[in-house]
Structures are given as C-alpha cells and as structure tokens.
Image 1 (tube, rainbow, N blue to C red):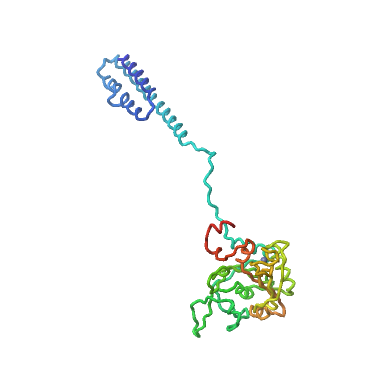
Image 2 (tube, rainbow, N blue to C red):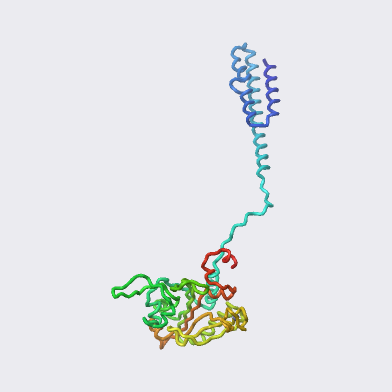
Length: 346
Ligand SMILES: [Zn+2]
C-alpha cells in the first residue's frame, strides 16, 4: 500500500510538470485529488486496514495529499505568471509610435482683434465696459443729439423692437452703435472717465462684401477736466502706431457726427499700395478706420455732467475692418460664415 502511494505521487507530479493550460490543470486535480481519485479511495479504505498498518498508511497518504496539493498550488502560480508574461508581450505598447493629435481650438479673428485693441487701450489706462444690445431710442439716438427726424438716423438703418408705447412710439431697438453706452456710463460713473466699449451692433441691411446686418464696434470715451483735442489726437495716434505699426502714417480730417463737436475721422496709409492708390483704398492712398471728436456739450449735459467743468472726447470704429485691412480680406461675410477652412488661418 505504501509503495502504491509512492508510485501514485511520482506519477501525479510527473504529469503535473507537462501541464501548460488551466483546463488540463483542472482535470489533473479531479484525477488525483478529486472525490473519485485513487488517493481518496485509499484514504476511505483506511478503516478496513489492521490498526498498525492503518497508522503508517494514513500518515503517508496524508503526506502525499499535502504534497500533491502543494504541487498544484505551485503549478497554478507558475501558469498565472506565464499567462501574465504572454499577455504583457501581446499587449505591449510601442511608446515610440506618434500619438493622435487633438484638434486645438482657437479664438475667432474678430475676438482676437477685440482682445488686441482692448489690451492696447487698457495699457493706456482705459477700462473695458459693456452695455445692452437691446437699447432704448433715448440712449442710442436722443441723448446723443440725434432727435427724431434728424437726418443722421437715415445713415443708420435701424432694427426696431416690435413694442409700442400708448402713444404709438417704438422706443426700443437693437443698438446701431456702441456709442449707445456712453450716456449710461456718464450717468453712473463720476469723471475722470476713460473707457472702451466693445460689442455687437445691428443694422437693417442686406449682407454683401462690405456689409453685414450684425458686426462689431469698439467705442471709446474720455471725460475729465481739461481734456482737449490734443489728448484725442495723441491717444488715437498711439493706438494706430501700436496696432498698425510704427511706420504707418496717420491722417486726421474733419468729419461730422451729431454727438461730437468738432468731429474728425482718422485714416491710415493704405497697407496694400503704401499710399500710391489702389482698389482697396479707392485710389486715395488712405483708409478711414475710425470716427472721433470732442464730446458735444449737449451730450455731456444729457449724461448729467456740466460742460463748463468737464470736456471729453469719443471715438468709434468697426472692428471687422481691422483684420480685413491687416490681412487683405475682400469679403466681410467670411468672418460670420463659420467656415473653419477660413477661420483656421488666423
Ligand atoms: Zn491702396
């Protein structure tokens, strides 16, 4: 019986060494350690043996059982390690492969331009403020010296909000210029004032290469004691120098806007022809970029300020025009068509 156990053990361990799959392992376990295995049969038959033999065989059988269980555990461990090594090899990551590039977002060219203009003025001590796009006639026209029937209203085709007062007036509109914020600021903030006002404005216009019903403007307003035309020129000259380059020539000429007196327009030397004259500059050599002027005394009064004490200047420009001039783009609508092929170039 003892010899039989010894043979059983060596046979089982021998078989175990050639196993290399978990399924073979299970059938090995059933065969040698299962309920119907030879070892179990021997252990069950112990009771039938004589007492002295029973003791020796029982001890030996239990040792064999422990050895086989031990071998099984070791084999299981070895198999697991083999599998791990195999899958590590299979799923190996080649870290030298190039990665997948992620598309990177960017700011819209108009937004970039707005940021650039605002930061130039911020460096000169201006604050950036904003106002409502749906505005009262009062702030957009009346208080800026543009009463009803004033011809200046015709130059800004207005989108009116469908809302009438009891007397049949339509007092609400989509602002036609960011100058509409000027009075609001004068009403709420005591001078000295130095602000720029970026934002969307609206016109009742069909879109073509140079017009869109919505576009961006930036206005500026300075009010304090003793502000003169020299401050206006110095400030805007510095802006043009910073935005368009040190060498760009700048020209001021008289212009008319109801809310300033005197009024001026500022033009820069054409970037395409360098002043010789081309299609972009209408063969004048100059491109107008903004309107400006000394704030009209009546406008100061409308904003609650005493024109005997305070003077100020204001300016306004279309923001879309600036990247157009800088990059020589010939159609404003490209900025608002959401065509990524176009927008990705900036
Ligand atoms: Zn030109």
